[in-house]
Length: 391
Image (cartoon, rainbow, N blue to C red; front, top):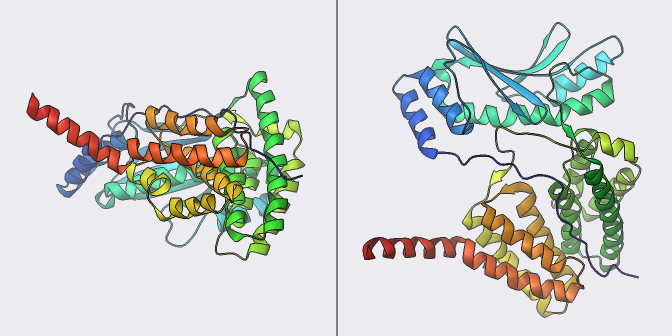
């Protein structure tokens, strides 16, 4: 019997309370760099990227911050700035050759600004450059990418190669009640995806396969605070089954393989890969009104989803809309009002039949786009302008 609905529980993953950035500070950093005030430009860039954190005079003391499991340290060495995050350390029990091969091939590449370094037994990612060449946009890119690479690979290297992690920030484990909910979400999710892939094979629709793959990846990214080996394996599988340029049969096989792999995970393994991390730099992209409009408003995607509803293909329409909502919540940060509105949409259709879910979420998406999308933004600006002149 085909799956009749989807359960969309409240997330266990906590939203990151990160202060909004002051783009004026970024512009000020560029002005300082162009004026030759290189040290002050670096400090201003850090203040822009890490709002609310006191940035010291780097000529006198080092500065550090936490990004997930990575600890990033910044200091000035002569006329150079150095950024470093320790990934792992080799020991007598580790598979040193295999670990170094992975480290030097997967985490380094031509043109990449930060590169792997081996100092004694310690493996790290490092960026070093002259202050006079440290344009703020370059520093911002390194600070956003390097810590996330470390956070994504340190736990995986421990499991695969037996290395030590001497300078890793601990991840707060889930409480017993949270873990019980996580197990329920995990099992329910893969049961649903298993039913959906069977439906995808029956329909032989590439578009339906797109929606199934998106749901399989985005739902867990939104609901569960995964890290370590399970997150790495899930992301690796998702790279294949969400690749719309790949042949559908290969994507179907990749998703089926991922389902089997994830279902083999024991509760102990899952517990070790779930926890609440802290991030000094927002790990999500910043959502914009134009993104809401293009995704939930008058864009081509909503038009074609509307055509599915009109022709009675409610399951496909509902699944596409649900996947869009999950992507917006999993990959982007929003104001509390927008995030609440998106969550309300999922609450309205959780456990509902496909036809009702498609109709309800279609109307909710259009309303959300009108209020918070580009048109709503312009309306609010007009209201503020009128209020200013009335005053």
